[in-house]
Structure formats: structure tokens, C-alpha cells
Image 1 (tube, rainbow, N blue to C red):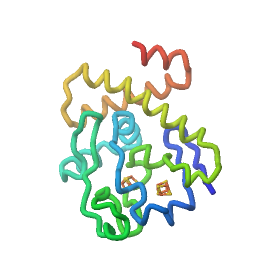
Image 2: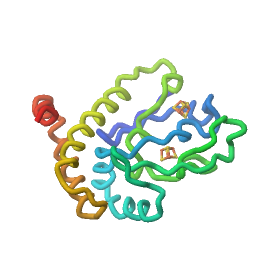
Image 3: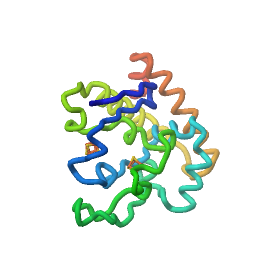
Length: 179
Ligand code: SF4
Ligand code: SF4
């Protein structure tokens, strides 16, 4: 059964199956998603810029071409899951990061098994929206100097907020992607 906590780009899909994941206790967190440009903007706009800089300083996050990648650590459950490594934020009782500091993918992605026959429409729409926002933001990031500073993150937050607002109007969003 799926529980939806609807909140625009912060929407969460939660499935009972994830607590007993058929892939083992590490579940999806064996392969953490990139915190991509639109995710970073979302986190900044929820007050997380200092947290991002702290995580960068501690190297739990590190720069990659799409934004920030999450460090992976040895998985103590490798023998039972077959997954040698897992997300640095995965603890004994699951994710140790609050929802407003996660990649949006961590909040809305559930596999087809977890959907259990429920419609994938909301998951797929959020996937498409974030992919589209990332495309636009990546082009804007490439057009300016990239330094991992508070100033850069705050700029990304503003760009991201404007894009999500534009996204409520299909025509304006298409123009942003094409432009
Ligand atoms: S979404 Fe699917 S693979 Fe991921 S933790 Fe849930 S049940 Fe497991
Ligand atoms: S941030 Fe949390 S939910 Fe996302 S992959 Fe890591 S442990 Fe899993």
C-alpha cells in the first residue's frame, strides 16, 4: 500500500514494502541518487545551504558533473544483500537524513513492486519534472563560474524556485527548456 504525502516538488511516496524490501535491508540505499541541481535548489530553499556546505566539508557529499554525489561506505549487510557498499546516510534504522535534506528521488521514488498495483503516474511525473528542471539548471550552471560557496547555492535556490513556479505554466516551462 502506498501513502502519498503531497507537497509539490517535496512530495513523498511511502510504501509498506520498503520496510521489508525484497532486495534486503539496504534496499534502494545501496545505490543513492545524485543530489542534482534541482535537488540542491530544493534543499537550499528549505534552509539547507549550510548543511550542504558542512556535508561537502566532511566529504559525505562531493562534486560530480550533475551536482553533488553521495559518498558510499562499506555495507555491513553485504553478506545478506549482495551489495558491498551503501549510502553514507543509511543507518541501522534506515535513512538518517530528514526529508528536506534528501534528493527528491529519495522522497518520491518507489519501485513497481512497492507500488503494488498503484498508479505510477505521480512517481513518473515527479521524475520527468526533476529531469526537466535539471536540464535547464545544468545549462545555467555551465554559463557561470562554479564554486561551492553559499553564494552559488543561494543563486541555485533562486533559479530553482523561479523554474518551479514557471513549471506551473506548461508553455513557460517549455520555453525555459528550449531557451
Ligand atoms: S522502493 Fe522497492 S527496492 Fe526500494 S526499498 Fe522500496 S521495496 Fe525496496
Ligand atoms: S539519503 Fe537516505 S533515502 Fe537517500 S539513499 Fe541515502 S539513506 Fe537512502
